[in-house]
Length: 363
Image (tube, rainbow, N blue to C red):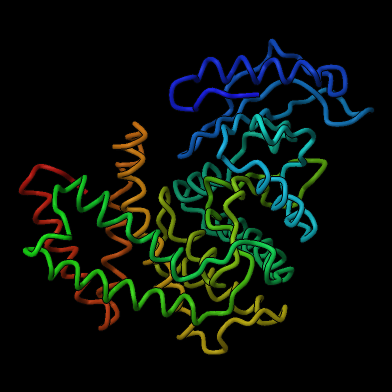
């Protein structure tokens, strides 16, 4: 069937989702009148929770109905869910899917998020609790990476890396700060960006390549509950690729919503590095070089996010991500100042911050 676009037909999409769910009421004991929003994300995907059960003999619980308007990635979600489950990573089980319509019915991992638990641990000054949760997440990541093989997921190649970072000059510099990078007056800016991007791409491509989730961060991780006590439950994995081994480690610890002191970060990085080596993953044998790889990989992600959050605001009308720009500016500046080849980029950030103050924008 022909479906309306996600931009202008939210209510229509919801009615279509309900009609699709009616066909599965008997099998899963669905109670359609309990359907309520569960969450949304930076894309056009939406999630709804409703009463139901995943299998005969289960007591009534809840399931998640997913509205993922094409071209949102239902096929990829199903594929990666199978790969993660095979790696003994706790993920939603796909019960029903309509690829053409963009609807899925999946099991519910609950409402207790890693983000909430880690925030509570920070507020309570409880590093032991935070460390235990992070170690569980890093152990799950290692299990996932150990199953890596080529030609299964899309490659996170040079073009992909560059395309992500170009979001920054287009949306952060151009749209948010009103400063283009193609004009002659800004040739110096473009030069700094090009040299920085080239360094980060070379570092990423030189690393061992593994299965990579891309959004492995506390907001997408859930606290597991009985009968599956394995932490964490992992969500939002349809964008998985085959890429640098440090990417998901960096995204877990240098996140949009939480920041950690350097001692805690280093403890987690060392834990991952030692466990990964013992498991046979090809991490760099020198921790100093491994740490540099994490930092440069994180900077690539932070450059992307500066542009992405601005695009989500100006193009998609979701302004709440903008308040997290200062965190990513901080991450980026700290890394760029630490390494001599990246210091021109640190200087550029300083110049841009001055420009932002002049025109009344904030980071």
